Every structure is written in structure tokens, then in C-alpha cells.
Length: 142
Ligand code: T46
Image (cartoon, rainbow, N blue to C red; front, side, top):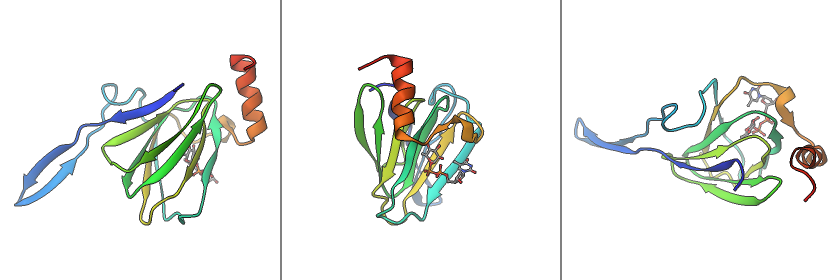
């Protein structure tokens, strides 16, 4: 699918002080395709709440559900797909021109986001018709 996809990170299992645990490191450029300039996380979301409903013009991001699970639907000029994030060692890469919706947050879900740039409201397209028109101009008529 255009400008998005699942990334599988390393999961290092170890026993220390008699206890078992996992550790997932994420390094640029071997594990993610951009340098991280911002990190934020979304949590305490009610199960019936829907977030997102926008696209970005330039921003690259990786979404990782580090606790619980959440669904993410991506729509672009070519395709649409629903992803289930339920594994802290897996990330969803989301590049520009993808409309995103996040929903069905489980109780305690924490969605960690690694972003290629600082927060900039000018980079958002929050109106769906504008998103369609932006993509039509960029990629042509369907
Ligand atoms: C995205 C999805 C996955 C800031 O002030 N700084 C920030 O870095 C961010 C991300 C947001 N904000 C403010 C802007 C709004 O007043 O926090 C408020 C909530 O943001 P928003 O409604 O855009 O949140 P989501 O969960 O719908 O979307 C967020 C990101 O904004 C977006 O880039 O891809 O998570």
C-alpha cells in the first residue's frame, strides 16, 4: 500500500535478576526511515472514541501500540486498509498523504508516535474533501 506499512522491530528477551523481560530498540536509519524530531503518546482514550481524521502533507511517523491494542485505518489516493496494532515490537509507518483514523482503543492502550518533525498545524489536512482534492492534484484523476 502507498507510503505506509508495518515495521517489525527487534525483540530482545533476557533474564536479569531472575526476572524475564523484553526490550525493543529502534535506531535510525536501520530500523526507521527518518530521524526522530518529536515523540508523543496517546492514552486514556475511551473505547468508543475515534481520533485522527486528518492527513499530513510532509510528516513521516511510526505508530507503536506499547500497551493494549488499537485499530488504525489508512486511506490514500490508491487504497485503504485497516491495521491492528497489538504488539510493542511492531510499528506502523505512515507517510504523507494518508488519511488516518484510530479507534477501538482497548482499556489501558498507549499509542506511542515517533515523528519526523516538530508539531506544525500547517502540515495537517483536517478536511476530507480538501484531502481528496490535494491528492487529485498530486496524483491525478482516478
Ligand atoms: C497523528 C495521529 C496519529 C500538540 O500541541 N502537539 C503535538 O505534537 C500533537 C501531536 C498535538 N498537539 C495538540 C493539537 C491538538 O490541540 O494536541 C491536540 C490533539 O491533537 P489531535 O487532535 O491532532 O490528535 P489526534 O490523536 O487526532 O492525532 C495525533 C496527531 O496530531 C497526528 O499527527 O498522525 O495522532
